[in-house]
Amino acid sequence: MTLAKPFGTLADGTAVALYTLTNRNGLVAKITNFGGRITELYVPDRHGQLGNINLGHDDVRPYTLPSEPFFGALIGRVANRMANAKFELDGKTYTIPANDGPNALHGGKRGFDKVIWKASASRNSLALSYLSADGEMGFPGNLQAEVIYTLGDDNALRIDYTAVTDQPTYVNLTNHAYFNLAGPGSGDILSHEITIAADRYTPVDANLLPTGEIAPVKGTKLDLTTPTPIGKNIADLPVGYDHNYVLDDPGGKSPVASVYEPKTGRVMEVFTDQPGIQFYTGNFLDGTIMGLGGTYHKHGAFCLETQDFPASPHHPEFPSIILRPGERYQQFGLFKFSTRS
Image 1 (cartoon, helix red, strand yellow):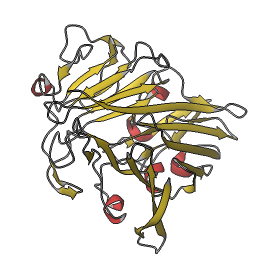
Image 2 (spheres, one colour):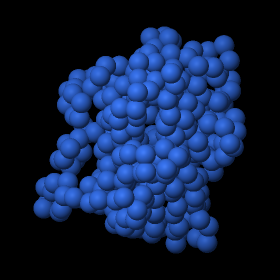
Image 3 (cartoon, rainbow, N blue to C red):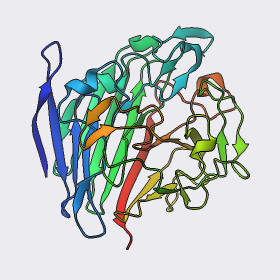
Image 4 (cartoon, helix red, strand yellow):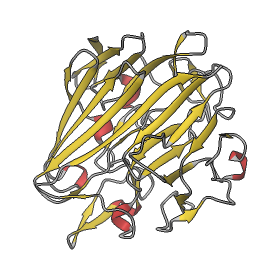
């Protein structure tokens, strides 16, 4: 069933709504039309006790703050970092408003995470649509995007993304949910065990910008091909995990990533048809944000963002993210929940 209720107002007086999806097993997903953000996600532990595993807030206003770290948000037009906040397309240079030093992050200062999406709800799904006008955040073309959240009775939250354009443009959409399978504010996620089915990754420089290389994970601290506690090697990385993994078999029947939390027994499996997944370990959470469950400290959550490779416009050797008129952008990410004894 889907329920809607007020979720506060923006500074200009615009009313924001919160939608609650519930499946037949009692799982609950709460999503707001401001940025298409997942605000809460309740799944059972090994004893059948439901608990929230998503970092977020109970009102829209904290999501509007300049330092807000994209909690639960839809990301677009282009996820991740764009060097020097510029890109070239068909011989023309475009500029995005920088919001990460000299670079653009997650679509610029007012990306898809900060807009009101038009919502349409059914029994266990929420369809969100948004028309990104030609020139918005510097991107060419009128882009019509639609994202559908479905909370299935198989205890999976599926996110389907589609988009069409009237001019050539770049598109790479994802969701930036922050997960802690023991509960938000319960401590760090370093004891969570993660597996990512990826033999390769895209290295980054000191500014977390992809170098264009595709390198093997074998013999590095980034090798997560077997179950590994997140904290095992994190101290040996400059800031923690914030890397795009090149998936071995996207679109297959096996999960591209899985996470197990020993204390609660919760398991999250990720499926996608995208070539990459960004693994991020809340490196920039610093204890200054209080949300549902308590205060959010460094490594207090992890993200697994299904996507194309970051900074593809600057690296023609990466899969192209160009969308042209007459084409249809389409991808999905699915998060399935279960438990282990």
